[in-house]
Image 1: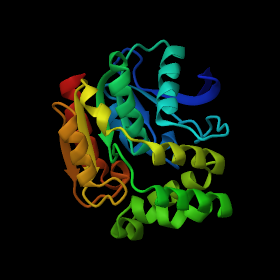
Image 2 (image 1 turned 90 degrees about the vertical axis):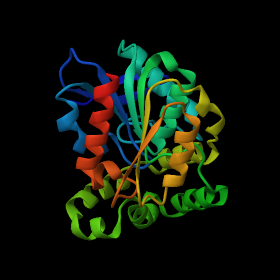
Image 3 (image 1 turned 180 degrees about the horizontal axis):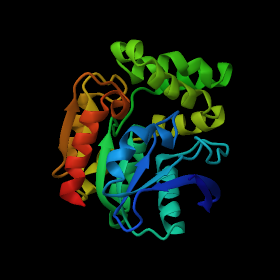
Image 4 (image 1 turned 180 degrees about the vertical axis):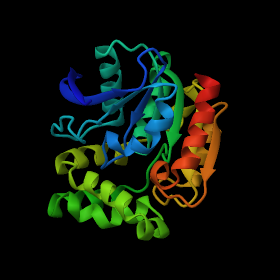
Length: 263
């Protein structure tokens, strides 16, 4: 059941699932989604873990104060939420923007991170002009002005054609993202530059990326792998940006195999 709590000056929405006496896995959503993007992982995760999901600032039902935000601020939200819930450390999984938050946490809050799952994410995001164009579109047309292009990046063409119910669920997440929250978080992604901090990450790390992801590419995943000591990368075939939804079974296998060795 969803709950709210005051943390880092905002009201954050979160929920727990799974047995209370197990290690905590925390899941962080992508830009323009919310905590329900992780629904396909819940059945396997809750067998062995206590799962903490939350809506990132500006998304879902968490507050969306005026931005711009920074990745540092979004990471501080996570630490404040953990403090408010009296949780010392977690296994942290983030996809796209969530993975960017994970990188910052791993580098700056190592005692809070037991392991890192960095999914379809990057340490730098090109280009300034592209992000400014997207922000301008959102300002002019609202979040729906970005809908079609986002879905084309997030899923392969066969999945868009053959999995319409799954695609519509994601489309509804995009539609219900507050435009102001998107713009503030898009500014954080645009301005992020984290390659230099990756060597500070000491937690066991896996990088999971869709082979056909045009938003956070395999090449960008290799940068993470090369700069994080001991990190391993898994490339999922026939998957684009939301690989946890498009290739759920393969994603879950990689995730659980990693967690079984680190938890």
